[in-house]
Structures are given as C-alpha cells and as structure tokens.
Length: 70
Image (cartoon, rainbow, N blue to C red; front, side, top):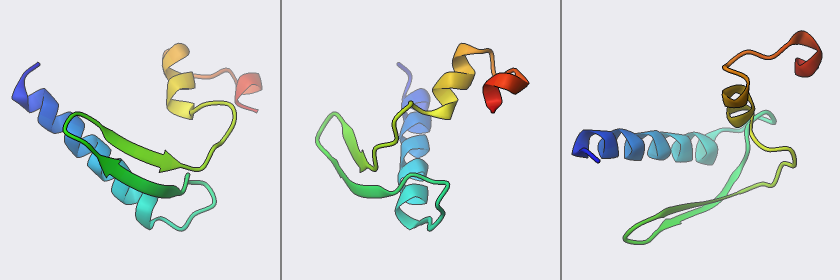
C-alpha cells in the first residue's frame, strides 16, 4: 500500500473521529472513547442496530429505491 493511500485513510478516520467527538446532533452517532495502538485506531460509539447507511448504499450501487429508503 502506498504511503499516500495510508495518509488518506488516516485523515478520513481522524476527521470522522473529530466530527463524532464534537457534534451535538441527534442524527450523528456519539463517540464515547477513541484510542489506538501501533496498528489500529479504536472508536467506541453508541450502538445503532441495522448497520450503517454507507454500507447499505455500497450494496445498492449508491442508490436506493424509494420504498427501501422509507
């Protein structure tokens, strides 16, 4: 893996961590704790059953039918 790809991934997760840590919206998952070791970043968040919207959109090529979106 190139160092640029690694940098982009780290920046993405740092941004996600910062948003969850500081946001006060009922629409965003709250970050409880964040910690890391030499190989991993751990984000401890609220549990929301059903998975995340991004994974669902990935399974349906980025577009949901109207009935499914309800």
